[in-house]
Length: 418
Image (cartoon, rainbow, N blue to C red):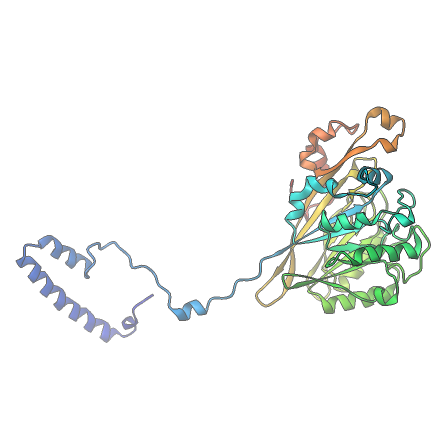
């Protein structure tokens, strides 16, 4: 910091003269004592510091310290996982000797990626109405209540979509039982399948470090007949607009789950594009697409009022025992919620960690169509799956499938290995 006398030339010159007289007196005294070397140092340094190259340590006044801007909050890292689809073989592998179920071990291979998230979205593809409704897989699904428990506990699901083509497979009673199972798993919030009109019209908000998240969910269709109160549908314009308006008022970040698209297709269809554009116009920050069971591209949409909406058209399956490689390749979709000093929120840094769903199944078992023989289920980052892929009929390396996945997702997302 500069000395204040430097702002007044007259005072600066007077100071120099006084110092000159003082230095001369000191030099004379020192010479009398035989300290010529010290005197020379004083003359060169112009002060009592014997090292003329030494610079004073910078200092800051209390006023300057108080004027520093407060640090912006750390980004909140959000991840999203696709279809949690418990086929019969998934349930059979989860069943314990005492008749209970444990799905937690299936997620141990991606534990590090799950732990890195601050907020986690999951798509629960099927009801978890419990054993009283009968545990079943394709084509009419129902999981035990432990399925919801382990999605919450082991997978860390905070925001849970229930608006799918399968969540009415056990009717409105199955929906009610599924919601009841999740009621005990606070503070997670669910959306998309409802017990009544009040529940359908209520936008729940999830708080993470002072930033609020709203989840609003819609399905394109249902396999089983169901009314438009028990399930949120994309074509219910009044409901879409109401829920989006409420979410936008109540939350800093609005995430929309859209269960849509053409099954087993990497191509985005016109209905998806149209609904995504509508949601962006209604203020969605992020759209997470599920339903096709395979990956589809990622893009940004401009919003009329400014800003952009991040759209994941399909993040594929996560937990399942579907048969084909593309059905067993998913992503942990990630993005950061960044707050500025004024409280504004932006969505940044979309990333994708490709995953591989593996199970042991011999060529003979597969040729015989012995679906019940699928066992030793595991999820792992795709980049680490070389040895697992060698056990399959797919004939690709992890690097080759990783390259194909990167091509499908497109250039608006950064693909990372783990």
